[in-house]
Length: 315
Ligand SMILES: O=C(O)CCC(=O)C(=O)O
Ligand SMILES: [Fe+2]
Image 1 (cartoon, rainbow, N blue to C red):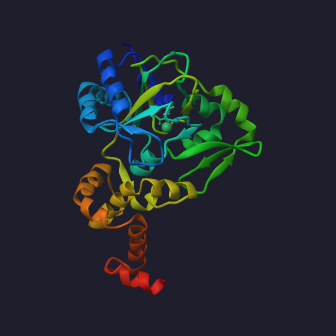
Image 2 (cartoon, helix red, strand yellow; image 1 turned 60 degrees about the vertical axis):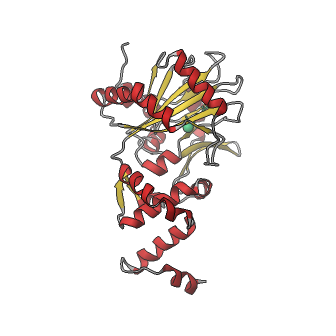
Image 3 (cartoon, helix red, strand yellow; image 1 turned 180 degrees about the vertical axis):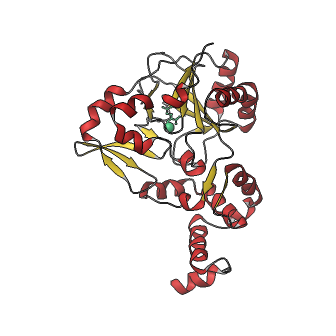
């Protein structure tokens, strides 16, 4: 098949028809019915088992990553996440860039969402709508500049106005003048079950409609060398504060890993390795305690070790 891989750089997406066979689709569908609800209470989603994710990495996504790396300036090497989105279970997302992938990898250029409908009653319905980057750049350059290579943001309608809102830092833009342009530049590729829509992590997307009981699976192909900064992880907005709390195990482990080696930055793969080591410790502490200890350490310097004392003094 003749695919224009460079579209991933210029437009931010690529449609690959019939990526999965009907037997693979069947396996995914039965897992999605039986599957376990994710511990992450930010969304109503089920997770793909690590074994099935690894099987698909070997059979499909490894080759896909290789093709992406050899044909574009995007670097991806690991299939990390697999989740099911079911309209029946309440999935209906408005325009957004993904949040937690941004908090956890801080690299949305070298990050691909492989989105595949597995139950798809109608090719014309319940797809994903997207805003291609090339058109966004020429039509609404301000929004392009704010969002390219970025993440964790939404488009919000409020009091008759339209805003771009960052959920990573206290930033927003009044887009009211561009609202109709935004609607007109959005597109909706029509997918059949087993087709893949590959989206770069920074691409704006939304649930198209909820008219059918569509189920999709989303795998994330990412850059294990992406550098994660602790300070950036702790940049805060009210929405981020809530989201970190709703999935606090993950963020407690990330912050404990930073604390364990005393580094401000490290590759995402190093963080994953450290998280296995500090798992037990993470069971006996909490996100707010780890954040507070980090703050005290920064104030008192590296030698500081007993935050309990400072906690008491401050109360
Ligand atoms: O399946 C949907 O409607 C939403 C999917 C989505 O937002 C995602 O894959 O990040
Ligand atoms: Fe999303």
